[in-house]
Amino acid sequence: MFSLPITLDQQVIDIKATLNNGSVIPIICLGTFQIRGKGTILKVLDAAFRIGYRGIDTAAVYGNETDIGSALKQLLPKYNLRREDIFIISKLAPEDHGDEQRVKNAVYTSLRNLDTPYLDSYLIHWPAASGLSPADPSNVSIRMRTWNALTKLYDNGSGVLKSIGISNYTAEHIRQLLNSSSVVPVLNQVEFHPHWQQTKELHSICKEFKILLQAYSSLGGSSNKNLLKDPIVTEIAHNNNLSTAQVLLRWALQRNYAVVPKSTTVERIAENADLNKILSNQDMEALNNIGKKQKYAWNPDIVR
Image 1 (spheres, rainbow, N blue to C red):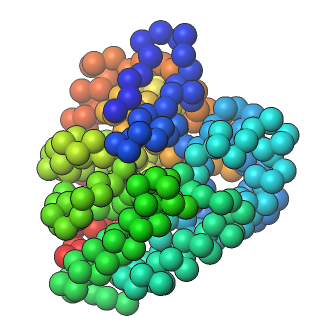
Image 2 (image 1 turned 120 degrees about the vertical axis):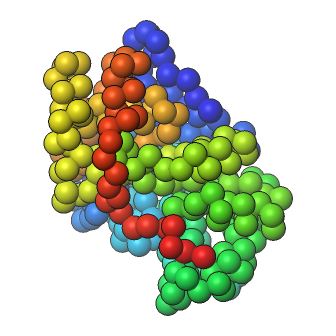
């Protein structure tokens, strides 16, 4: 999917992965979950572009698309960037699943909010529809109607969505999708960190169909520091002269996941992009076998 440099000749922040439809995506995109406010968004994106980020991850439910669109109007000219130099991901809210017109309206609302004629990738944010029990079997058919609506807006890359994907999908959800559609998702954004390493089945099916895995919650919970304070993580950070966040992000990259780190602090935005230090096989094995299992975000395993 992508290869990491074994020397410092290429900065990790500059590396792109090729998606299964031929599009390319930065392996480090700026996460914007819980980042709101026009001034805050402008400050964060200004710092990110200056550092070298060229990907932005947002979603309808984040409530910040309009402020991101406004910031891009100012910052693209400032950094001599064109719209096509930036990869923007947004996501469909669970309340907009199912009905084709509702899906279309949601997509065009995001386009207006972001003030862009197209999105580089658009994901189904959650495999269940709002208002339904996760165990409701009708989630399966609703997911397919939602996916089919997105494929029309994708139109093999000729539509307003240049690629389409999924988020929080299990291996079973992916199998259901592939059994009903010839359009393969380009990526699956999931929780992934040493305390929650996903299943062999998920990794296998994504590898088979060249679906890029993109990690969120790489540092654990927003208000739970258990992962950042894990003794194994802190020891590896100390031994490598890295922050614990850098260890966790670099580990995900060496596991062939793209990442979407977020911060409102300029220093940490820069730190999260400085990931050229290679973790040794011994360090990787220690993290792979950390011996603790804890989830910090919502659990799609309960969704039919």
